[in-house]
Length: 322
Image 1 (cartoon, rainbow, N blue to C red):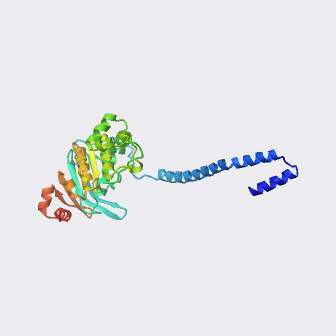
Image 2: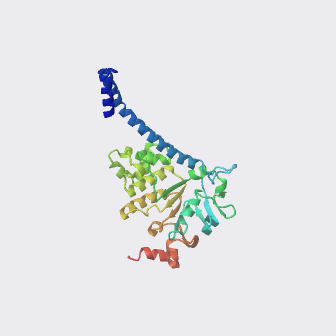
């Protein structure tokens, strides 16, 4: 600025420009300041966007190993059972599941329990076909249809999943619940929220069902987020339900409310429940106890306590203070 003023004064003294010309130049020069700052900001956003787009396209260009066969069929509505028979399943060279063989009858609750790393979540992730079992290492079938022969869209349309890690969006409660079925009516959303014990806390919010809940539902408590997730699963109304540690991160009061919502969710569905807290699986029809990737015990809660094996040991560890 000082250089411009000095040089401008010199030109005026020597009659190369008039004072008006110099004033016009100074005004125009300082008016350029704001557009240049905006241009710099735009350049920064372009660079950030370019870097982000590069990462997105890297993911999109990945060769996805699990895909539909050319002759894959649509899965009819489940009627009878899910049969899980896995001789061996591994991640690379690490063997995770061995000699798994059980059936989940339609309308029943099957629970998987065991210490961390026993293979429970891996087993649950194989049912929606997040991983594929090698052709000679076993199969999972629904009413006799091998999952590898079924279109993934028709398979996953019949499965609802509620996990410990809840995926919510920075959007309204209505849109987060209806994500399970984007064409559902407002009446269905309200009905699902009541069944999930979410209606009361929603009505206490300033905007009620139009309340935005922040990225990942940050404006809600853990129990509230979980009940929104259960509302979403109710809206989807899928015949197969997978619950993976759905109450493990909650305090006692929230767990009781969420557990009541889960009981409504499991009605008339074929449910697979994974739980560390054994109180949440005591009413399951069948409990399978996993250890090091194998089922070492199976039976009802009472039957397993009478066996005095691994389940009794886990139960004793959790309730030793009572």
